[in-house]
Image 1 (spheres, helix red, strand yellow):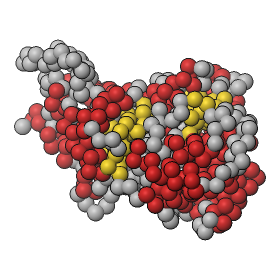
Image 2 (cartoon, helix red, strand yellow; image 1 turned 180 degrees about the vertical axis):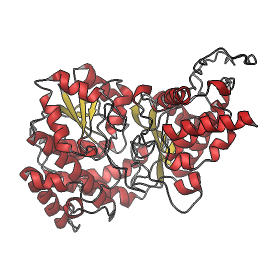
Image 3 (cartoon, rainbow, N blue to C red; image 1 turned 135 degrees about the vertical axis):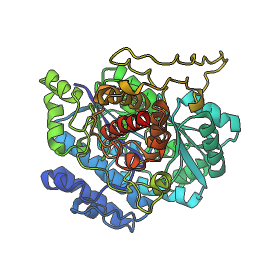
Image 4 (cartoon, helix red, strand yellow; image 1 turned 90 degrees about the vertical axis):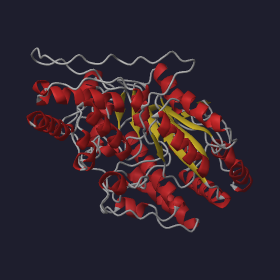
Length: 510
């Protein structure tokens, strides 16, 4: 099996103790973490590895430079584990600053030089002090770019094309808020992203110039592995590392195109060198059915890697293991068995949005590469088990032809006749929910387990859960369902299905 290693960009600060096992098992990991610590101390920063190796769950974010180096440490340590266990990538791909991690993993840069360049990048961005934001929008790049161009500001641009229905717009904060309102009016899901430094816009030209002028030039090695650059749209050759990092600050990241080109060239497995399924989420959305592995999200990361390596001699065993639904129903991606830490990255006032209490619901990590999927129209209802006399359904609403592909807002969804209470048995409702949620999230319905936690296991952010519960409420004519906060903060398809069946039965008895 030809595997691609993918390196995430700006994600949530890693959990404490995430590298404990890898540190104990592998000399290469211990040596690499020691080298990152040494470089950090030379730049006046604290040790990076201490919190990552200690067994604690604290989040000690001490500024963007430390956050970047922690993400680097997790990515490069995962890479060393993969290599130590015999995994050999056909290519390494990084998302944004993750390209720097990819260069170090491939041997083009030393670990120390990559750490210094990451800190230099962070410092010039902080010094510029640009008041910008990044907004993930659940539509394709063409529509997102058209929206940005409609406002017509040189610094408001399409920044990232991550997946067929996930794009990121970068620009001045006031304009991003305007874009968010327009997206909401169009029915496009959107989410402002919590990142220390919004980038990938011409507004970063000043920081890019400063980085080229001040960052020390570093030796550039031949490298052991192929590195693909999503912003350059080609493999990295003898490009100057400082120019690579500086150029990415103002350029668009075309992850979707890079993923599809690698798959077309023969890559059939993608391995995330990070704590959570971030880039692999884009892979799944871009190439249905592809194998994705996230070792650190597995209860036994080493076993997950050994299964990947074993595929070189037994393809069928590994593919059947990945294709089968996991215990939490997520299918191809190997997931973490415990819930994500509460408040890993708070990009939305979850407590106000969902429960209006002081206790926030747990959220999956969110970054400028956080998956946001476009809503799909609800599936047609399953036929009732036995013939039932019902009133004729109103005719479907057919949209008039348009010269451009319109966004489908919730109001434009064709009305569906409310099902008869007699047809609302648990299995029927669960089947409809799997179809509705699967279409929205981009999952095959049969991979959605009825006991999967929507947030803890499937990583469905609060914004999506609100939209989905609204669709369930409309589908089954249960307006009170929207206000049931327990279905948002600790929801599963089982709980939602049982609630729908019970509420419809109560409505029929009135």
